[in-house]
Image (cartoon, rainbow, N blue to C red; front, side, top):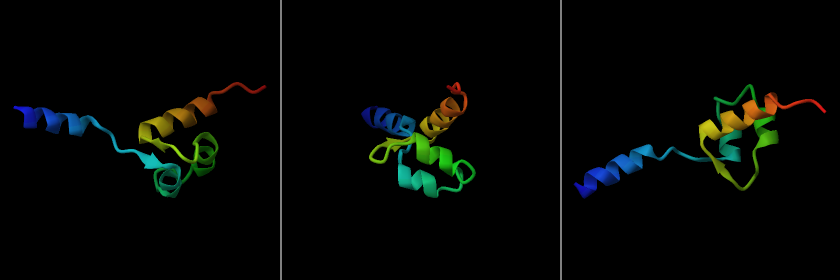
Length: 63
């Protein structure tokens, strides 16, 4: 039973990537410049976090 709980907990964790890995990925090829602007160098992000940061940046108001 304890092993079963550990396996389901491990499945819920989403992989995290460095800024360099994200910038090198095919998924963000067209938005590489935006990803470069919204991500910090020494942090790790899930793909969902990167998408949210890019969308938030694009929806930001012009000053």
